[in-house]
Length: 89
Image (cartoon, rainbow, N blue to C red; front, side, top):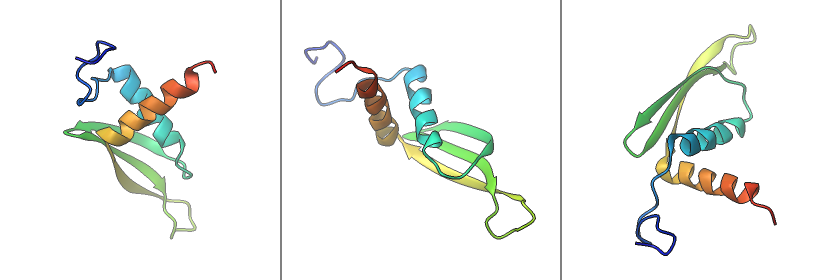
């Protein structure tokens, strides 16, 4: 077990749903395109996010389905970044 009591040094610590979803929201906020009707699926090794995004080829303003996968590593890095940003310096 690691010195902080959060598992072995070789294994990443288990993340709570609050941490993971907050981090995933942060990753989604970094996207430049607007999204609507977002669906988040918890899959082995990460998340699949599906949403409607503006169709780039349609000047009438229609929406197209887009999918993006976020690995546990990406989400874990986002959790770490949020934790670091929240610490006083």
